[in-house]
Image (cartoon, rainbow, N blue to C red):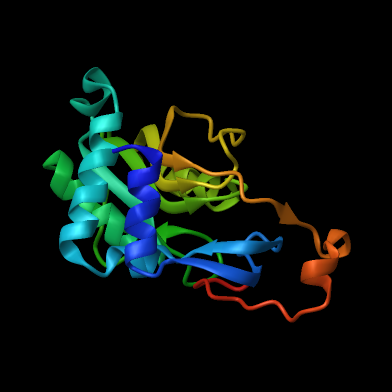
Length: 193
């Protein structure tokens, strides 16, 4: 799947938004990719996950024994990645502010884990999820995402396989360009900044 094919999937599902957005990272942007909308069609979600799986080198892909995604945004793509790879999928969540496995999810010593996100911007929540997975006994051997908003600059400490890397500019609150400074930011994501 080429970059334009991925963006076409977002456009078709009205998941590529334009305006003034406050991202989970606390930064502002004129563009927002609403992955929940692109994933609400099960067939589209399956196609996107299969494309991500195909981007992971075969020798690495065959070693993956579990998929773990951070809740909330990663749950659907994590489940679809589990299906695409033929392995169990689970998620970490933040009941008290720190990611942890709950709901009876466990990792066995030696589990080789693919951590999957919907969107990576700064990599903070991805690194926190990776830490939680390792704390639970898993070994994260790779990470994947639908969208890398860092355009390839993020370092997660493991090989990273985004379906598409995009460089929509983001801004600190005190660096807003005039076209954003004059409007109220909308927070369409699932997590407080």
